[in-house]
Image 1 (cartoon, one colour):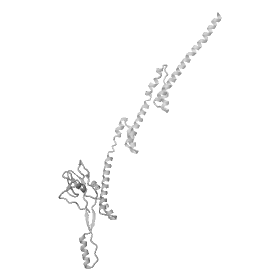
Image 2 (cartoon, helix red, strand yellow; image 1 turned 90 degrees about the vertical axis):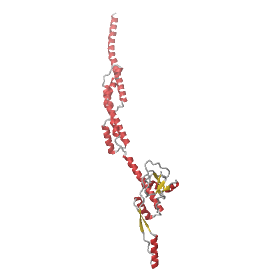
Image 3 (cartoon, helix red, strand yellow; image 1 turned 120 degrees about the vertical axis):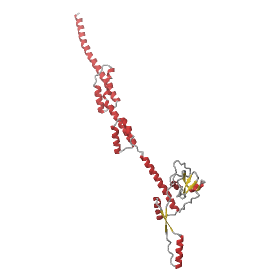
Image 4 (cartoon, one colour; image 1 turned 60 degrees about the vertical axis):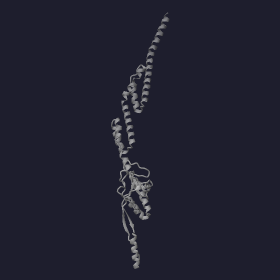
Length: 309
């Protein structure tokens, strides 16, 4: 009987320490599991936000410093607090977006050098919403006007070159004579045409024959020839048909060896260059004379065609 009592006492004594030791072990296992869950949650949040380097280290330190909870629901508490601790990250993201917007606007406007620096400084110093307004302040509207004027002048110069070349060819000019003529023609100044009157030449030759003296060279006379001034452009809104042009320069380029006339489209009568009605009727257009004749139009009865050389 005493042996049985001693045996029972020994069993009870041995079982008490094991129960006492089991409780801390269970508590330690639970704490380690919660810490692992918190680590996973913090890692997932850092990955979702794309944090790297020092930003990730700072975030993880803050996230893991929270007290671990005993329930899975409480373990997610640090994740809810993350937006509050990353307000600086949100501000940095807004700054990056503003930088992208300003860069895109500067690229669209083709800004470079100092102009780009000034624009970027102004764009980044204001609120994000003000960037588009600042970008629209630069209006390169004057460029097309200057380009159009330059193109028009170049076109007129090319037409004048064609007209002068055709005139020189018609007169059979070559060498120095052609160079002089082209220079005068392109400058728009009156050209000097030197002619030898036949009557004077004949008289001098007769006198020389009577006296037996050598025939003297015929005296040269200089005639000042002033080309007619370019006519005015056709009235705005004029509907031009085939063979009709808005300026006489354009018409001359079309028919450099023919006369250019002004057709009064209302009366169907055309006028020559240098006359009162040339380029001045309310409705009309410039035409080559041969095209006007072919179209059934006629010249004004009180006008004569200018003499061509």
